[in-house]
Length: 343
Image (cartoon, rainbow, N blue to C red):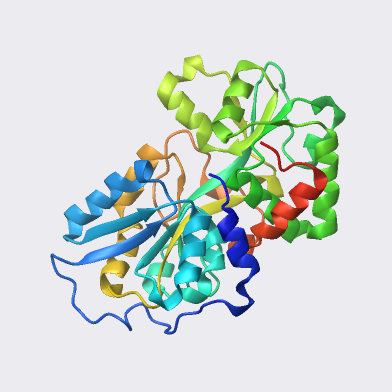
């Protein structure tokens, strides 16, 4: 999913960000939830992915969903532009960075909602809560790379020159680079990216193309999210898929866990219905939907995970405030500087 230029422009100019008032998700609600209530959701998750989930919410609660779909960055930019005049009640984002960019426009969530998810996967300011997680991995061809690296520094070895696929305009790759900037600093990130560029990685348009190139042996390794391989296995059968996932070493930034999450607009006109929507996304119904539809990790405490996934607790992802992933404009500038913003 590409990061929108409108999002970059909006975030870059937000020294005067249009903030909304209020600290409670119920303060602006003037009507009780009824069968004819409609909640307006700005969704950074695609219609194809979540429309059936939204329909299940309506069936379970009687609350209709007016969904407006787009890139998470585009939706964040729109919310910031609209400010308190936005018709949105809820922002359901594919990416924590987009949620971080609009935190000032979101209401605080109640403790009972936030407590369902490990605090490291929600806003430190109580403004949004994670729903599902995706893990960055190295997808590898075991014939060409029988011992794949499990750190990003291992990817810089000369033996992988011209043999690593990546999707430079994909939001997940750019979120990884943003995390790299946050954890290693601007100089450290530039040093790694420069060395990575010198190792002649092969650019693809999207993660699924990287995965397929690894599977066919076009390249030996690829940088993707964990679920792309599971998606292919589900579609073609395990016997037909050669590639495997290498999860990263504990604490390595290459194993970033990013989240899809949700927040309620501070000026939501239907905040009680919005809260019901947020709570529904943490329900067993939603967990089962995501297990079968996306193979993402379910962040709700105690939830079962999709078959074939390593235990979430074993991943030991790098420690980072996910709201800090909002500085995508600086990430794109750095990628442009080192010559990696292609495709």
